[in-house]
Image (cartoon, rainbow, N blue to C red; front, side, top):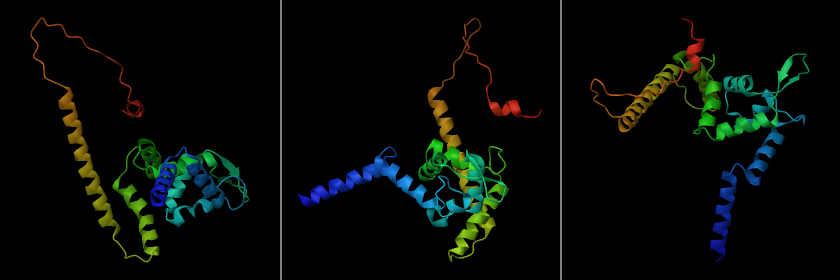
Length: 205
């Protein structure tokens, strides 16, 4: 009976921890934010946030996260404009990292990886991003890895999944569409709407 009760309590604790709207999750994020806020000013600076995840996040990712997602700025002691992350921005940051496979998480993280705001990544971007990853990897006492080899492997991996995605899209299209043979005089009703892709409007012709 005691073992059964203990397993039920553990299951309940796990469910609470996985539920982002639970008191347990809210307390966990709040405690983490307060632990990073060394000067107790209600925000987290880049220097303070470097300790997140035991300092495993790269410098370029941290810079991008602040540049793309931090809403609030405070004047630093050096006279410049030192951006700092408030709790709301920190919550977005944690949710994105903990839910990388969701549309919201992917959108947040892709903006951090999109170094030039072009909406896509080049091999140069991947090279730049992985350079900091390799540095962190080597600092941990791991073997030195060739950037070019990893870049090529990432490119191969992405191309493979893009091809699979195209195949899935073609299959989905084929399932929902069928060819029709029309004769002269048949009535055809068309539903028209303006082209609304934002990227086309910004393109220089």
